[in-house]
Image (cartoon, rainbow, N blue to C red):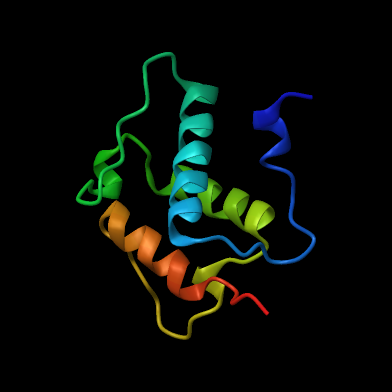
Length: 104
């Protein structure tokens, strides 16, 4: 099994990552999903990248969130009482970082 396949196995317990590691995981999964359906290169995700201008629609982002839940062991969108709608990549990363499980 190659290294990329190993990096996206479902988490039995929530995974604790640094903000930089979390950002790298999200970018890697985004790029993997992009390449599943397209032949062109995925867009570069910068802090100010508007999520709905990446080429992913709301359904693709729902799948991304579900796959992140499988991999990381948590879904921040189900952990908050009020709805959250990140507009930019930085907001998306910040939301995941704020809801991430704290190391014991």
